[in-house]
Length: 278
Length: 210
Image 1 (cartoon, rainbow over the protein chains, first blue to last red):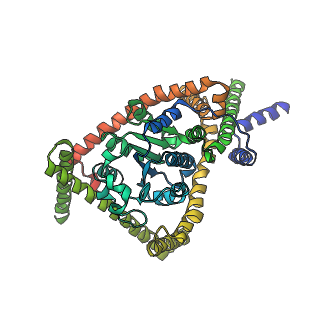
Image 2 (image 1 turned 120 degrees about the vertical axis):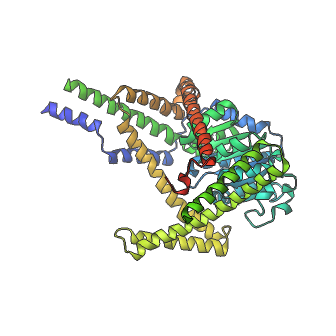
């Protein structure tokens, strides 16, 4: 009987019901949201490199802020996007905000444009919100040589040629940096078309596409990358714009720890099963 | 006969456009560059039309389900079309910058999309527990790599011992980058071959043929 009981326990540990796993994760998420622990966070060399690219751009230069994230990826992309926007505002860069996925217009309007407004920057002189453009990579390629040929009107219906900031911004040659908020694969478009035109490209990407961009980072085609929510949180810490990224770090650490423990339990139970079977 | 002709015409347009855009990229001839630019602009306009075509297809597909009263589907299709109509009419009449449209985005679309996406976290949590087992030699390597990736992505371990971060970065920089480069080179070569096959009419699958 005790043997059977033991076997049952190990068998249970080898095949824990998925509903129990869901409850464990849900409990961790709720607990860390209600009781922030403040686990330590170190800024990685990758995030430092990203920051230094931004730091080297002289104040007041023009840059593109491309929102290629979707509503679904925003919890991971958003904290970094907001922290970068706050940093841009502090450096008075002339910023064009646009995106190549339909969500870009609404995400930009809800989360990014208010940061520029609240900082007292003037629309049309300090920043322009162009909204969303269809056409993906073809549009990105075309923008390299003729920005005003593609963008006739901004998100609010103003003629682009009438906006004072756009008088000196005609093509990629007039842009000092592209920052891509990437929840899809938009950064690749800029790497292929804007980097050869001499514009450095930096990107904040969701965790699942990090490995896809590592070759570009190694070759220098991508000048900097914030890697997933952790990279976003590190950038928040580095620029003192603490937000949702930092608050997600406790959850990330505890959830990953729980996962490691569960994987170890599952494997120990499996080995024990083999040993018993001979 | 007419089908064959229309396919040949489509292929001819495709070949001429592709050659002109490629020539405009590689040759420094002003007239050619300008022509390539115009073709790119046309492509952007066509892409905008494709969105409309997608909407028509969506309405047509789900209308059929409603008309045929498809079991367990028609009421979902009706709900989808109702949501589509409300969003489209609001956007067209009031513009996407209007507070009502923004409300739909912030309080309907965003929570639904986020709820759907966040369930992935739970599935991955459960799947990782089940899949990462030392059943074979290959799965043991997968388990090892996964553990390094998990530990390197959790901030607390980096704070405990900085070696975890170094190890994680090495995995990213060496095997990760090497694998990624191999993949990208393969994709690039495949894309060039696909492009050449398309230009020389060997590839016709994009027109719906064999």
